[in-house]
Length: 243
Image 1 (tube, one colour):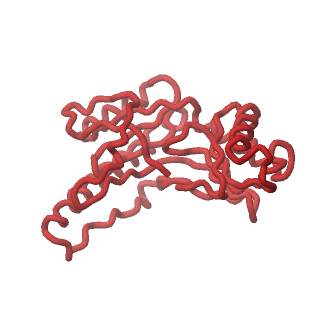
Image 2 (cartoon, helix red, strand yellow):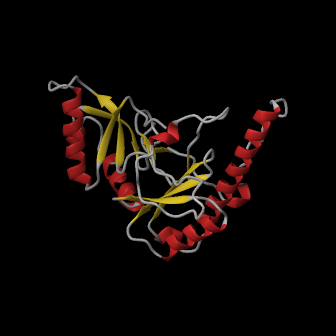
Image 3 (cartoon, helix red, strand yellow):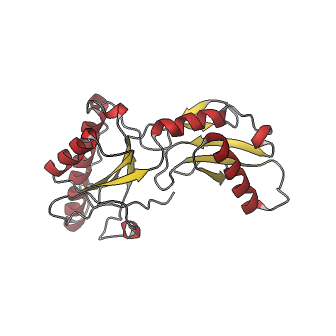
């Protein structure tokens, strides 16, 4: 999966909020440690249908209660002094971002706000708040808290809420492969949260090679599913949605 989201540069002195911009540079390497992006605090419905109907799996790093917060791996003691210093700095940024994320999850009103999930970049020490709907008091609290912690944060606006996508996924899961709109498609998974796609991702493959060709069949199926669910649909052939 390509991580292609906007983030505020840590060089910004005020940690100001920016709207979406192209940020392909996030994928470039820097120093001995390559740029890493992590998807966190996403409540995800990735439903594996092939084999066991209704099995749910996480399509992203799903946050846990603060009491069971996983420890971040510390740098290896045998690393060179330069690498060790870089890894220690990275570890500190990971801790800061993790702490912010757990604070967000515990924030009163977060479940009924426009919050969807957070994408964090430990190398840059920055975070992206994925949001649906207009800014509200909860969003302002999160932005203010990030600034207080000196964490650059940006807002990525989405067309669909978490509930919109989960409802659409449930609707698609209820349709058996080989029937209805899936007449020639065997569904392997349905993913509701994706870093670079605003909609539902349906993974699987065609039962019979489509006469019109794969690209045209993908486009037609995505259009039919979007009309049925009311949200954008992406087809990922091969089964499980890539992470």
